[in-house]
Structures are given as C-alpha cells and as structure tokens.
Length: 287
Image 1 (cartoon, rainbow, N blue to C red):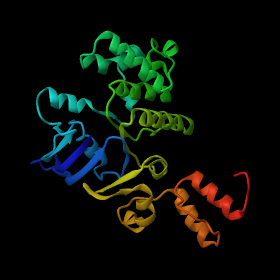
Image 2 (cartoon, one colour):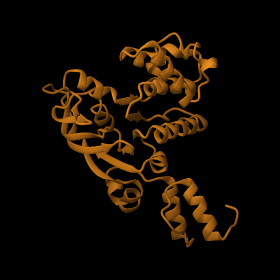
Image 3 (cartoon, rainbow, N blue to C red):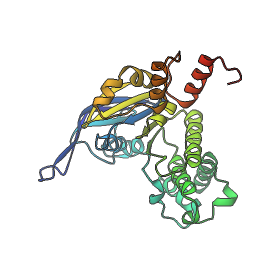
C-alpha cells in the first residue's frame, strides 16, 4: 500500500499575469508504515505537494495514486482513496467550527456515512489517542480550550477518520515546548499503533531528525533529495546549504566540538545523541 506521485506539475493562476509554477515534474512513492519529513525553504513546494496527496489540488500534469486509485478520479473508489489520506493543516485549530468537541471530531466519520455507534466509537478512540479525557472534554466548546488542547481536538478530528496516511503541516507551529512534545508523543503513539504513514512538513530540522526515517528535500518546486534522514544530514550538508536548508543544531555543535578536539563518535543528529556522545568521550558514567 502506498501513495504514488507520478510526474506531477502544478501551476498557480495559470494563464494569468501572476502565473507561478509550484511543482515541476515531481515523482515519489510513500509507503504505508513510513515516517517521512518534507523539508525545504519557504516557497519550495512542500505544502503544495502535500495538498496533492489527497486530491485537494489537482495536478496540471501527472497523477497521484493512493493504493492504486487515482485520487482525482470520480466515483466511490476515488472518494474512498481520498479519505485514506488525512491532513492536519498548519494551525489546525482555525478549522474548528462545532459547538462541542464531540461534534467537531464526529463531523468527518458522520459525513462519511458511518452509523451512530461507529461514529461514537471513533470519537472516543480519537480523543483517547490525543489524551483528551472524554468525560471532561466531549461536551465542552473547543473555543474554550487552550491552544494546545484546540490543536489536539483538530488532530483528533482527522484521526477519527482512521486514515492510512496522515499529513501533518507544521504541527508544532506556535506551541510552547511542553505542548509541542505532547503533540509529537501522541503522533508517535498513533504512528506505531496503527502502522500508518506519517508525512511531516516542517521547518524544524530538529523535528525531522528526531522523528523521521526518511527526508524529502524540496527546492524550486522540485524534489531534490530523497534519502534516509541520517544519510541526508550527514552526507549532503553542502547540498542542503545550496538549497537554503539547515542541518540540526546538535549536528552543528557536534562538528564544532570535534574541531575543538573532542573525539565524538557515531552519527549525531539529536540532542540525546549529542549528550550520549559527549558523555562517552569524557568517560562520564551514569549518562
């Protein structure tokens, strides 16, 4: 099972003075069970690519297939394929609209034709996944919650649809560190338990290094790099610099410490890996 992107191009406002090509002959396959991060500078095409994966945008040329079905086709099969790709937009709390948390989360499953018992079970399961107690939050207004709680409600609304592929566009934007860590902890729980694919769009190289197994690097509407996260950051640093993409701060600090003579070993991309490598180089125990 996979999402197959076949040579898609996309032009905003085609045949107008403001015409802009956002995607240029992009091809990629994302398999169920992968955690993929899409990175790139602002305007590189990250979000435009993501919005093609469930048919929100139709490619100017090329096609997108979900489990072998063209998402831009017509009929029940194409509709089902689109529903298999859930998307949580940047600042998803802006999408909230219902009077209660329950009704907001229930909208998707109910609108897809599920019976009341199935809808109820989906809402309860989704709230459990995002760590919102049903008895406490189900009948509260989503607009009376904190920013982090509102975002979890929005995520639950997508999770309740039980997608096989979940797109997260900058899920930590605007959140404090505690809320950000909670969101990603819940995301990893969903990812591991449901064995879905997660496609993370992020400007944070630390998030990409910590969570993603695979990186897609976009620039100028093209897919420039596709590889294992550690390989891309370690082996393609100069290429990333040319593409205006940074590397994780822990990686840069490790390089600086090595230049100062500290014998750090192994691939160091995350804060935890850096702490462990420093402790080992210094001969500290208990770290």
